[in-house]
Length: 323
Image (cartoon, rainbow, N blue to C red):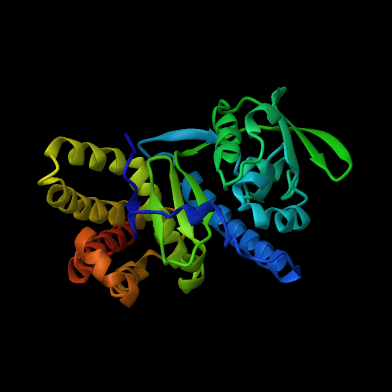
Protein backbone atom coordinates (compact mmCIF):
# COMPACT_ATOMS: atom_id res chain seq x y z
CA UNK A 1 0.00 0.00 0.00
CA UNK A 2 1.35 3.39 -0.97
CA UNK A 3 2.12 5.71 1.93
CA UNK A 4 0.30 8.97 1.39
CA UNK A 5 2.55 12.01 1.19
CA UNK A 6 1.97 15.04 3.38
CA UNK A 7 3.02 18.58 2.75
CA UNK A 8 2.23 21.89 1.19
CA UNK A 9 0.83 19.87 -1.69
CA UNK A 10 -0.08 16.25 -1.12
CA UNK A 11 0.82 14.62 -4.41
CA UNK A 12 4.20 14.80 -6.09
CA UNK A 13 4.19 14.28 -9.84
CA UNK A 14 6.74 12.09 -11.58
CA UNK A 15 8.45 15.24 -12.83
CA UNK A 16 10.06 15.53 -9.42
CA UNK A 17 12.88 13.31 -10.55
CA UNK A 18 12.99 14.29 -14.18
CA UNK A 19 13.08 17.27 -16.48
CA UNK A 20 11.10 18.17 -19.57
CA UNK A 21 11.58 15.27 -21.97
CA UNK A 22 11.38 17.68 -24.92
CA UNK A 23 14.32 19.77 -23.72
CA UNK A 24 17.23 20.19 -26.12
CA UNK A 25 20.75 19.50 -24.91
CA UNK A 26 22.64 22.79 -24.96
CA UNK A 27 24.91 24.99 -22.89
CA UNK A 28 21.75 26.58 -21.51
CA UNK A 29 20.44 23.15 -20.49
CA UNK A 30 23.68 22.35 -18.69
CA UNK A 31 23.57 25.75 -17.00
CA UNK A 32 20.06 25.01 -15.72
CA UNK A 33 21.28 21.73 -14.24
CA UNK A 34 24.17 23.48 -12.51
CA UNK A 35 21.70 26.03 -11.11
CA UNK A 36 19.65 23.15 -9.69
CA UNK A 37 22.81 21.78 -8.10
CA UNK A 38 23.27 25.09 -6.31
CA UNK A 39 19.72 24.77 -4.98
CA UNK A 40 20.54 21.20 -3.92
CA UNK A 41 23.50 22.55 -1.97
CA UNK A 42 21.30 25.10 -0.22
CA UNK A 43 18.79 22.39 0.68
CA UNK A 44 21.56 20.10 1.93
CA UNK A 45 23.13 22.80 4.11
CA UNK A 46 19.82 23.87 5.65
CA UNK A 47 18.55 20.33 6.16
CA UNK A 48 21.75 19.19 7.84
CA UNK A 49 21.84 22.19 10.15
CA UNK A 50 18.29 21.41 11.32
CA UNK A 51 18.80 17.64 11.57
CA UNK A 52 22.09 17.86 13.42
CA UNK A 53 21.00 20.46 15.99
CA UNK A 54 17.80 18.71 17.06
CA UNK A 55 19.01 15.18 17.75
CA UNK A 56 18.16 15.34 21.45
CA UNK A 57 14.49 16.15 20.77
CA UNK A 58 13.82 14.10 17.62
CA UNK A 59 11.71 10.96 18.16
CA UNK A 60 13.67 9.21 15.39
CA UNK A 61 17.39 9.42 14.63
CA UNK A 62 19.82 7.71 12.31
CA UNK A 63 23.48 7.92 11.38
CA UNK A 64 24.24 10.03 8.31
CA UNK A 65 27.22 11.58 6.57
CA UNK A 66 25.49 14.57 4.93
CA UNK A 67 25.49 13.96 1.18
CA UNK A 68 22.94 14.03 -1.60
CA UNK A 69 23.43 11.69 -4.56
CA UNK A 70 22.25 11.51 -8.14
CA UNK A 71 22.53 9.06 -11.03
CA UNK A 72 22.14 9.49 -14.76
CA UNK A 73 19.10 7.17 -14.82
CA UNK A 74 17.02 9.62 -12.77
CA UNK A 75 16.99 12.06 -15.69
CA UNK A 76 14.68 11.77 -18.68
CA UNK A 77 16.51 10.08 -21.60
CA UNK A 78 16.76 13.24 -23.71
CA UNK A 79 18.26 15.06 -20.74
CA UNK A 80 20.92 12.52 -19.83
CA UNK A 81 23.61 13.79 -22.19
CA UNK A 82 23.37 17.22 -20.58
CA UNK A 83 23.57 15.68 -17.10
CA UNK A 84 26.63 13.66 -18.10
CA UNK A 85 28.31 16.75 -19.54
CA UNK A 86 27.45 18.93 -16.54
CA UNK A 87 28.34 16.48 -13.79
CA UNK A 88 30.54 13.79 -15.33
CA UNK A 89 27.97 11.07 -14.61
CA UNK A 90 28.41 7.56 -15.99
CA UNK A 91 26.00 4.67 -16.52
CA UNK A 92 27.04 2.59 -13.53
CA UNK A 93 27.71 4.59 -10.38
CA UNK A 94 25.96 7.36 -8.48
CA UNK A 95 27.74 10.65 -7.90
CA UNK A 96 27.68 13.15 -5.07
CA UNK A 97 25.36 16.02 -5.88
CA UNK A 98 25.89 18.07 -2.70
CA UNK A 99 27.93 17.86 0.50
CA UNK A 100 26.29 19.54 3.49
CA UNK A 101 28.28 22.18 5.33
CA UNK A 102 29.71 20.94 8.67
CA UNK A 103 28.66 17.34 7.97
CA UNK A 104 31.04 14.36 8.34
CA UNK A 105 31.31 14.08 4.55
CA UNK A 106 32.62 17.64 4.35
CA UNK A 107 35.08 17.04 7.18
CA UNK A 108 36.37 13.97 5.34
CA UNK A 109 37.01 15.92 2.15
CA UNK A 110 34.24 14.50 -0.03
CA UNK A 111 33.23 16.83 -2.85
CA UNK A 112 30.34 17.32 -5.26
CA UNK A 113 30.79 15.30 -8.46
CA UNK A 114 32.85 12.60 -6.72
CA UNK A 115 31.66 9.28 -8.14
CA UNK A 116 30.73 6.82 -5.39
CA UNK A 117 31.84 3.31 -6.33
CA UNK A 118 31.67 1.34 -3.07
CA UNK A 119 30.74 1.58 0.60
CA UNK A 120 32.87 -0.57 2.92
CA UNK A 121 33.91 -2.68 -0.03
CA UNK A 122 30.39 -3.27 -1.35
CA UNK A 123 30.36 -2.26 -4.99
CA UNK A 124 27.43 0.02 -5.85
CA UNK A 125 27.31 -0.80 -9.54
CA UNK A 126 25.16 -3.82 -8.79
CA UNK A 127 22.71 -1.57 -6.96
CA UNK A 128 22.80 1.23 -9.46
CA UNK A 129 20.44 -0.29 -12.04
CA UNK A 130 21.22 0.26 -15.69
CA UNK A 131 19.48 3.09 -17.45
CA UNK A 132 15.82 2.60 -18.22
CA UNK A 133 13.72 4.21 -20.92
CA UNK A 134 11.96 6.37 -18.32
CA UNK A 135 13.46 8.35 -15.47
CA UNK A 136 13.93 6.22 -12.37
CA UNK A 137 15.05 7.03 -8.84
CA UNK A 138 15.94 3.44 -7.97
CA UNK A 139 19.69 3.87 -8.31
CA UNK A 140 19.84 6.84 -5.96
CA UNK A 141 17.47 5.20 -3.49
CA UNK A 142 19.61 2.06 -3.33
CA UNK A 143 22.85 4.01 -2.87
CA UNK A 144 21.35 6.27 -0.21
CA UNK A 145 20.04 3.22 1.64
CA UNK A 146 23.59 1.82 1.75
CA UNK A 147 24.84 5.04 3.32
CA UNK A 148 21.94 5.32 5.73
CA UNK A 149 22.58 1.79 7.02
CA UNK A 150 26.03 2.78 8.33
CA UNK A 151 26.36 2.74 12.15
CA UNK A 152 27.12 5.89 14.11
CA UNK A 153 30.70 6.60 15.23
CA UNK A 154 32.10 3.70 13.23
CA UNK A 155 34.40 4.73 10.40
CA UNK A 156 33.18 3.75 6.95
CA UNK A 157 35.38 3.59 3.88
CA UNK A 158 33.96 5.10 0.71
CA UNK A 159 35.65 4.27 -2.58
CA UNK A 160 35.34 7.20 -4.96
CA UNK A 161 36.54 8.45 -8.31
CA UNK A 162 37.54 12.08 -8.63
CA UNK A 163 38.48 12.77 -12.20
CA UNK A 164 41.14 10.17 -13.02
CA UNK A 165 41.91 9.46 -9.36
CA UNK A 166 40.70 6.51 -7.29
CA UNK A 167 40.48 7.42 -3.61
CA UNK A 168 39.54 5.68 -0.37
CA UNK A 169 37.90 8.14 2.02
CA UNK A 170 37.20 7.36 5.66
CA UNK A 171 34.10 9.03 7.09
CA UNK A 172 32.44 8.67 10.49
CA UNK A 173 28.62 8.98 10.38
CA UNK A 174 26.87 11.21 12.89
CA UNK A 175 23.47 10.71 14.51
CA UNK A 176 20.91 13.24 13.28
CA UNK A 177 17.13 13.49 12.97
CA UNK A 178 15.82 10.74 10.71
CA UNK A 179 14.67 12.37 7.50
CA UNK A 180 16.34 12.67 4.15
CA UNK A 181 15.90 16.12 2.56
CA UNK A 182 15.97 16.59 -1.21
CA UNK A 183 15.30 19.11 -3.93
CA UNK A 184 12.53 18.09 -6.34
CA UNK A 185 12.70 20.04 -9.63
CA UNK A 186 9.26 21.14 -10.74
CA UNK A 187 7.12 24.12 -11.65
CA UNK A 188 4.81 23.96 -8.63
CA UNK A 189 5.30 25.66 -5.27
CA UNK A 190 5.45 22.31 -3.58
CA UNK A 191 6.87 20.39 -0.64
CA UNK A 192 5.96 17.02 0.79
CA UNK A 193 7.00 14.19 3.07
CA UNK A 194 6.47 10.47 2.51
CA UNK A 195 7.74 9.09 5.82
CA UNK A 196 11.40 8.91 4.83
CA UNK A 197 12.11 11.79 2.47
CA UNK A 198 11.23 15.49 2.70
CA UNK A 199 11.14 17.06 -0.75
CA UNK A 200 11.18 20.76 -1.55
CA UNK A 201 10.46 21.95 -5.09
CA UNK A 202 12.90 24.15 -6.91
CA UNK A 203 10.21 26.75 -7.46
CA UNK A 204 9.50 26.90 -3.73
CA UNK A 205 13.21 27.35 -3.01
CA UNK A 206 13.14 30.37 -5.30
CA UNK A 207 9.82 31.62 -3.88
CA UNK A 208 10.93 31.87 -0.25
CA UNK A 209 12.51 35.18 0.65
CA UNK A 210 15.28 33.98 2.97
CA UNK A 211 17.05 30.96 4.40
CA UNK A 212 14.93 31.45 7.53
CA UNK A 213 11.77 30.84 5.50
CA UNK A 214 13.35 27.87 3.74
CA UNK A 215 14.29 26.42 7.13
CA UNK A 216 10.65 26.61 8.27
CA UNK A 217 9.53 24.65 5.20
CA UNK A 218 12.23 22.00 5.56
CA UNK A 219 11.69 21.61 9.30
CA UNK A 220 7.92 21.33 8.75
CA UNK A 221 8.33 18.48 6.25
CA UNK A 222 10.93 16.77 8.44
CA UNK A 223 8.45 16.99 11.32
CA UNK A 224 5.87 15.09 9.25
CA UNK A 225 8.37 12.25 8.83
CA UNK A 226 9.52 12.28 12.44
CA UNK A 227 5.93 12.21 13.72
CA UNK A 228 4.88 9.37 11.37
CA UNK A 229 2.19 11.53 9.81
CA UNK A 230 2.20 9.94 6.32
CA UNK A 231 1.83 6.45 7.79
CA UNK A 232 -0.89 7.52 10.23
CA UNK A 233 -2.87 9.34 7.54
CA UNK A 234 -2.66 6.37 5.21
CA UNK A 235 -3.91 4.06 7.97
CA UNK A 236 -6.84 6.36 8.74
CA UNK A 237 -7.85 6.40 5.08
CA UNK A 238 -7.65 2.61 4.83
CA UNK A 239 -9.72 2.01 7.96
CA UNK A 240 -12.42 4.57 7.30
CA UNK A 241 -13.75 3.12 4.05
CA UNK A 242 -14.19 4.72 0.66
CA UNK A 243 -17.28 6.79 1.53
CA UNK A 244 -15.74 8.65 4.45
CA UNK A 245 -12.00 8.43 3.89
CA UNK A 246 -11.64 11.87 2.34
CA UNK A 247 -13.46 13.59 5.19
CA UNK A 248 -11.56 11.77 7.91
CA UNK A 249 -8.24 12.19 6.14
CA UNK A 250 -8.91 15.89 5.62
CA UNK A 251 -9.61 16.50 9.31
CA UNK A 252 -6.65 14.38 10.37
CA UNK A 253 -4.34 16.09 7.92
CA UNK A 254 -5.32 19.57 9.04
CA UNK A 255 -4.39 18.64 12.60
CA UNK A 256 -1.14 17.07 11.42
CA UNK A 257 -0.26 20.28 9.58
CA UNK A 258 -0.66 22.26 12.80
CA UNK A 259 1.45 19.71 14.68
CA UNK A 260 4.15 19.85 11.99
CA UNK A 261 4.10 23.65 12.09
CA UNK A 262 4.66 23.56 15.87
CA UNK A 263 7.49 21.05 15.78
CA UNK A 264 9.03 22.66 12.70
CA UNK A 265 9.16 26.12 14.28
CA UNK A 266 10.85 24.68 17.36
CA UNK A 267 13.37 22.76 15.24
CA UNK A 268 14.16 25.84 13.14
CA UNK A 269 14.64 27.89 16.31
CA UNK A 270 16.98 25.32 17.82
CA UNK A 271 19.02 25.38 14.61
CA UNK A 272 19.49 29.12 14.97
CA UNK A 273 17.03 30.34 12.34
CA UNK A 274 14.68 33.29 12.88
CA UNK A 275 11.56 31.52 14.13
CA UNK A 276 9.73 34.80 14.85
CA UNK A 277 8.79 35.16 11.19
CA UNK A 278 6.74 31.92 11.27
CA UNK A 279 3.21 33.38 11.77
CA UNK A 280 3.56 35.81 8.87
CA UNK A 281 5.32 33.27 6.66
CA UNK A 282 2.76 30.49 7.04
CA UNK A 283 -0.07 32.97 6.57
CA UNK A 284 1.55 34.29 3.38
CA UNK A 285 2.11 30.79 2.02
CA UNK A 286 -1.41 29.71 2.96
CA UNK A 287 -2.83 32.72 1.11
CA UNK A 288 -0.75 32.22 -2.03
CA UNK A 289 -3.24 32.40 -4.88
CA UNK A 290 -2.20 29.27 -6.84
CA UNK A 291 -2.28 27.19 -3.65
CA UNK A 292 -5.21 28.62 -1.70
CA UNK A 293 -8.00 26.53 -3.25
CA UNK A 294 -6.11 23.27 -2.83
CA UNK A 295 -4.86 24.05 0.65
CA UNK A 296 -8.40 24.78 1.82
CA UNK A 297 -9.22 21.04 1.66
CA UNK A 298 -6.05 19.73 3.32
CA UNK A 299 -4.62 22.49 5.50
CA UNK A 300 -5.91 24.69 8.33
CA UNK A 301 -7.41 28.07 7.50
CA UNK A 302 -4.93 30.92 7.32
CA UNK A 303 -6.12 32.45 10.60
CA UNK A 304 -5.85 29.14 12.46
CA UNK A 305 -2.40 28.53 11.07
CA UNK A 306 -1.18 31.99 11.99
CA UNK A 307 -2.56 31.74 15.53
CA UNK A 308 -1.04 28.28 16.00
CA UNK A 309 2.37 29.54 14.88
CA UNK A 310 2.09 32.63 17.07
CA UNK A 311 1.49 30.50 20.17
CA UNK A 312 4.69 28.59 19.48
CA UNK A 313 6.64 31.80 18.90
CA UNK A 314 5.28 33.32 22.11
CA UNK A 315 6.27 30.21 24.08
CA UNK A 316 9.78 30.27 22.62
CA UNK A 317 10.11 33.99 23.34
CA UNK A 318 9.05 33.43 26.96
CA UNK A 319 11.49 30.56 27.34
CA UNK A 320 14.37 32.65 26.00
CA UNK A 321 13.48 35.57 28.27
CA UNK A 322 13.40 33.31 31.31
CA UNK A 323 16.83 31.82 30.73
